[in-house]
Image (cartoon, rainbow, N blue to C red; front, side):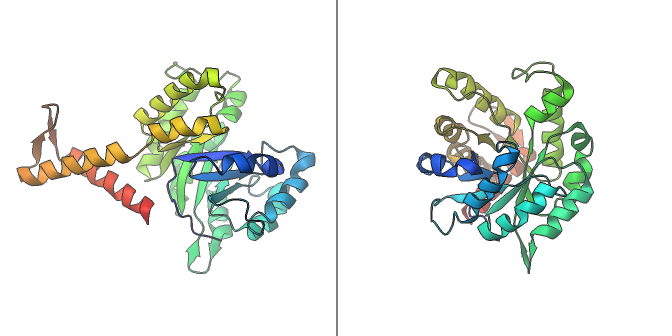
Length: 288
């Protein structure tokens, strides 16, 4: 399988694989970092064979110039076994594994993606309470995982609730915060879940979701419509963040000390320097 050219994308545009001929022309004109072709929940059972057929020859048809990500069905299921051949033919740049619930599944994923000396990177989606409870064990086994997300729709259905507002005192928001912290602990990037808001009249609300996600430490967002791409790219642009990090490092070097005064006149010490160095490190990784 291929090696992803943009290892930590900030925008993944999801397309149901059975409708790729309809959606790819518009999707490839967007600035989304990658297109995620879905074989799982957005494709009905009766259309999955057709979806596999369409996706299998996407590279031969040269339909997509962006990084190609694929979300198969849950590993260990009969549907995933049917997805295997498609994955081998597509050779995706990254594979998105849904409904991961145990460390054993992660080991199975790692073995499946192993190819010679290299392994295809992947993303994990936790979609169940069981997966959430096992997140530490899951993340600790995820050697070649780059990104993690929560599956809000599955989780809210299992909890018997509606999706919360941004800062509601709601179980899903608590799960988000705990998952994000666990991901950071294991040096994984958290990617914010899909938003239902994509119509022109909803974009301002969508921008608020983006702002909130960025502020709590999300790396990017999974998208379902081209309308969502421009505000996502703007919100998660690394240019200002990288510029600020470089300026902070410069100040520490000039100070020759573990303490500086920032542009706001506030005092910062070595944790701020380490954070700035990590930001530049991530940016370098994304360019390689």
